[in-house]
Amino acid sequence: MGKVYEQIDGKLAAWLLAQPVFFVGTAPLASSGMVNVSPKGMLGCFAVLDEHRVAYLDYTGSGAETIAHLRENGRIVIMFCAFDGKPAIVRLHGTGRHITVDDAEFQTLRPCFPKPETDGQRAIIVVDVARVSDSCGWSIPLMDYRADRDILDKAFARKEEEGTTREYWTNRNAHSIDGLPALEL
Image (cartoon, rainbow, N blue to C red; front, side):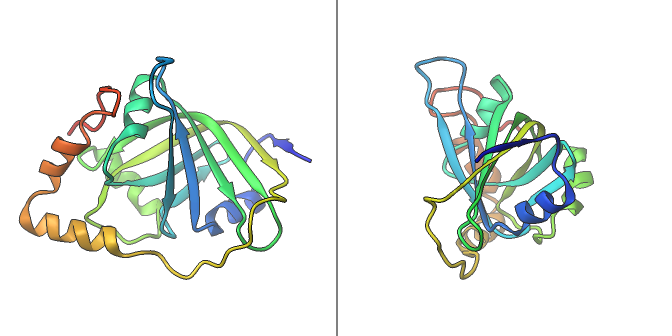
């Protein structure tokens, strides 16, 4: 049965940090807008900052829906699933904001992540967690984690060498698919 927690305690924090993948959900205010769910991963890209705050490294993607939705309304949910061991699903509901690589706060928060710096990182998403809950996860399949993919790192190392990372962000990440403003450097 599901349970609501007062905070992220040490045991839950350790479990969250051990998960190799999580999912982020956001939505615009307009009912005609597109709801977005994004998978996130690479070990070391998620951090528990305190009992009511978490953060993750936001890597460059084909869009910037999460950033656009957070800029518009701040609403976010992060969901973790246990794909091995005891079944469990944990959801962190709250409000979030993004911190770009150009922001001084980025350099302050970056040491919170054990994942080495990569050219593909474009922001840190910080979430003030208002609700922590779990559910059974009985129907979630058992799967084995093999390794992180290195494709993003390699692709953006090349873009950085070519000097085209910021061009990519400007052309592909400046607006959401609904036209909301997203990444702004």
